[in-house]
Image (cartoon, rainbow, N blue to C red):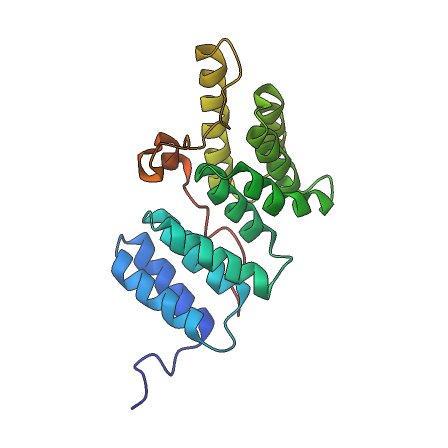
Length: 203
């Protein structure tokens, strides 16, 4: 028996998923994203969008898995690499975040994701003023994904607060859960607002 989605192509499924997400119907959005991602010819972008939606509903382990699938299919999908690095950073794994984000430094100097990635690497290394400056520069360069700018500004605001509240650099990377702090209790997860739909969808 053919699936009720069998007549829909990837672009149609993704658009239905995005529409469902925009209307707050997370259940329907996941169904459409998962159907698109299950196709043998699913693109890296599809896995990225599914992962971004998982992150939005706080299913972070599944988000990581889909971001990794996206990069396995399309290693050059920079937005997926950036968001995966951000996931690892907010999950408290600064070393893995740096490993994932480092290839973004091969992008052109004018690419906002290169600069944002550099900012997150500095953040993972507790270089807070330098991280804030890099993220601010990324915002200046980025005029195509304004939702991402909003997310990065929230990081900048919290960096300023962390610097003001602490006379010495924090022991653990900013925005990362301490070793004995459950990930789901990490207050900085509120900043993991994945800017999932700023890219180009497959046709």
